[in-house]
Length: 177
Image (cartoon, helix red, strand yellow):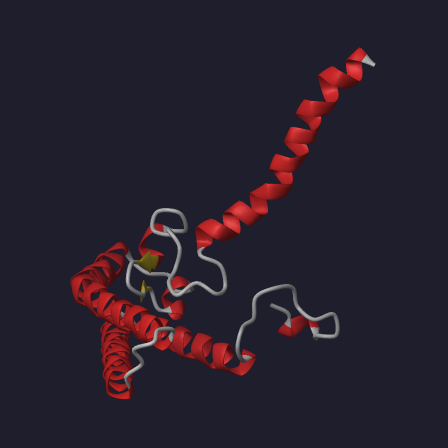
């Protein structure tokens, strides 16, 4: 009886903590319904994730880059970061203001349109910056690396959209994610 009192509470605490860890990790990542990404910089590969949507293009991770190419890619992304951050702030503010206006007694169609346009313009500017940066990176690649990047892009597009979670049981082995 005394042994149960000594062992059971710490064991229950350890079990509860172990069960809660995956949920805590999901919360730190931002989760699938979060507007932005969680605190990833420094957690998942340094240069891959920057605030405001700065991601290395997917094809870059699979290529055998030289140190000089990595430095150039970092420079390209680093130069884009302040503008990307500003556009992300604009989009986030417009989205927040739009939500507040939507669920208030002061709904104004003209203001909603202006906020939606502001968010769309900021997102479009971010998309243009990402495309320009990805092209600058592509231009740095050797012909062999470009060929590999083109193959990876074709494979990525053939695989279709990626979904979170385990692959369907009936998915062919090559199509499992």
